[in-house]
Image 1 (cartoon, one colour):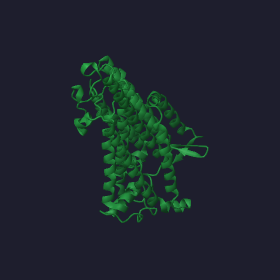
Image 2 (cartoon, one colour):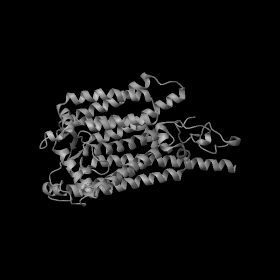
Image 3 (cartoon, rainbow, N blue to C red):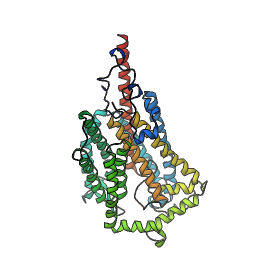
Image 4 (cartoon, rainbow, N blue to C red):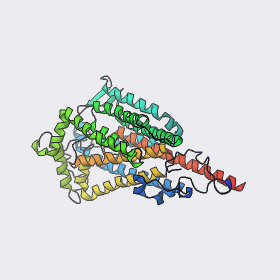
Length: 440
């Protein structure tokens, strides 16, 4: 049995240890006498770590991951107040307006995380296709004028009964969940039937899975979010060595498609030209990236001090959302942003570790999806702020202001914790059954 075999609470069925009893070690580890399949992810984190599937080990990783998120939330709260205080005082009459809303979002996110934590995992898995369809429908409502709320020229928000939220954040959860469900189902079918997957059964349905939400998001339009989501799913497939050649083909096929999408929309083409030379229009289209670079450069090595930013005085637009990284760099310098980058690297590292300590495909792929998505989103935000890629409306996870994205990230964390908790319960049940067998 390979390391990617699906394992449910009864995953030991068909395996036996010495004398016909339960196996002394899990069949997916080294005790099964098999070598690990050399996927990209196994090469990154090593086989020694994979052999330890003990409950304390995976729980310690979850605690570390949660601690990293708490640090990111603290950093975000500090710099949301610092970057938005002048704007909030001028437009809302209260310097802490955005900080208070962010703290409310954190509280709501914690509640949502706890609720998701206690939903049975089998129900989450079973409802993944229906939740995905529901999020597609909700996101499509952003095109209906009665619900749509246009901000900065895009219809990414829905407003109803005085409340507004970004439905694409729900679609993010739906797509990451359903892609895990889809891959789990297809890999299990391949292993059960011991047949090669075909273009008809795998690649075409998988392409449709990505194309439908991509069309909806591009219609809003939200090019940056679309690129991040699609790249996340494709990267996860590469990490688990699932149809690697076809996934690489998909990456190559997306390059001319992305070029066509840019060419068909004049504002996207203008972003490319401004990205190449923002100084050709320093008071217009190039103003934002120039001010972002000024903020980063002003920070130097140590920064000019927390709360002392000059760019927040109406020089840098979106200073508490898409370009909060620039304000952080200005106030705490290279040292501060190095610490922030380190937190995201650690999030990626421990997310990968947790993923490969989970036994079933569905849980493993979902954790990989979430880990890769948040890491790519953070990387994309930093690259935009530093002028390495054209500007896109992508926030810094757990740091930028935005309650919808914050709450949905908490929900995804809750699902991850649920998966770890469910595996711990199954392992505890296994240990109890093994003890009963030995005693008898």
